[in-house]
Length: 99
Length: 238
Image (cartoon, rainbow over all chains, first blue to last red; front, side, top):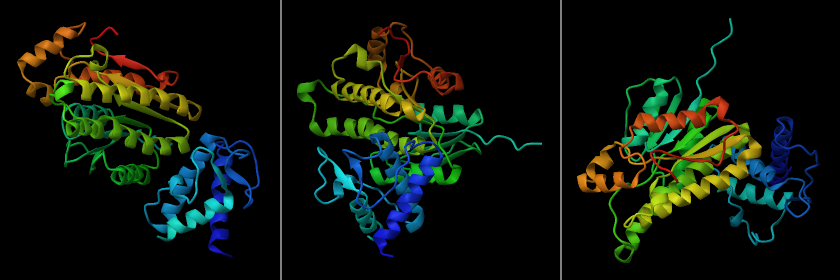
C-alpha cells in the first residue's frame, strides 16, 4: 500500500467516526476520485471543516507533530472555486505529515 | 456508587492580571477545571487552575495551548476569550500605525486565533460556550478610542458570525461588554480619564470583576443554551 492509500484509510476512519457520532449524516464512499470539497461534495461546508479538524487531530496523534491543515497551501487550490478530490487531499496530507 | 462527574473545563486567556485573573479565580473557586494562559507566568493558588505561557497573537502557540487542554482534559466546555490592550491612545490623525497594529494584534487577532482553535475542539464534541469580551466603548464612540473601539467592534461582529456558523454544532457565542471595570489597568489611566468615561455611562460607577463574572455565569449556565449572538453591556443603555 502506498502512503496515499494509507492516508485515505485514515480519512475513511475519520469519516466513519464522524458519522457514528452523528456529526456527518449522509453516508458515502470515500473513493479517491470523489470531490471532498467543492461542488458535488457529499459534505457540506461545516461537515468538511469538522472532517479537516478531526484529521488534524488524528495526524498530530499519529506523527507526534503539530499538524495544521491549511488548504491554501495545496498547489493550485482556488479558494473561490474549490475543487478538491480525496486523492489530492490525501497527497497533501502525506506531504505535510512527512515534513 | 457512581463516580462523580468530572469538572467542566474552562479555557480563559489573559489570566495574569485584571479581569482575566478574576474570571479564572471565579470559576476555579466554583469547581471548574480552569486552564488559563497569558504572556507571563501566573498562579492563582488553586489546585484546579493550570497556567500556560502563551502569546495569544501567535498562531502556533495558541494551537498548542488549546490542543494541550484537550489532551489533558479530553474536552473544552467553555472559553472566555479575554485578550487585548487597555491603554491610552490618540486622536485618529495622530494615531501611529504601529499602535493601531498593537491593538489589532492583541485584541481582534488574538480573539480570532483563540476562538478558531477552541471552536475546532467544540465542533467535534458538538457542544460548547464561547464568550468574548467587548467594551461599551463601541457604543459611545469616544474620541481617542479609534484603535481600541474598532477592534472591540470587530470582536462583536466576529462573535455574531461565529454564533450563526456554530449554532448547528450546539455551540453558543456571546459577548460580554463591560463598562469601566475596577482593575489595575483602569486605575492606571488616571482620575480625569475615569471621570470622563464614567460620565458616558448610564450607571455612573465602575463595575467589579465579580459583576462581569455574573454575566459570564449567565452565558455559561445550562439554561442559556438558547442564547447566542448576543451582546450584554454593563452600566450602559445601547
